[in-house]
Length: 125
Image (spheres, rainbow, N blue to C red):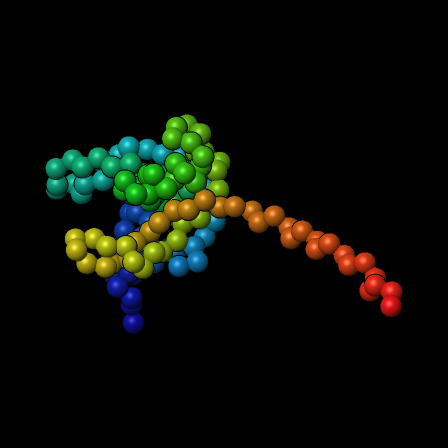
């Protein structure tokens, strides 16, 4: 049987496209576009496109600020090519209800572990 996410296709990225661990994605571009349906008044929002997806992610204020931090710049001209992690945060609220939502965080390549100092031989007795 079909899942609800299959029955209600979206033009934009949504929670079912990710999981709580998230995926490393590469910022392609940011655009300001009308996201309203054809029969509704215009509603312009910021969108981020990732090289790994055809669909864009609609940005809210929280994710705009998170993306700026993750890209180390408040200038969107510097975001292209930056790798970030997009993940599902199940604690995100909307309209007074916990609904879960997409979040963005910085992708950091972990440094290799440093070798612990070696011990000198046991002291002589």
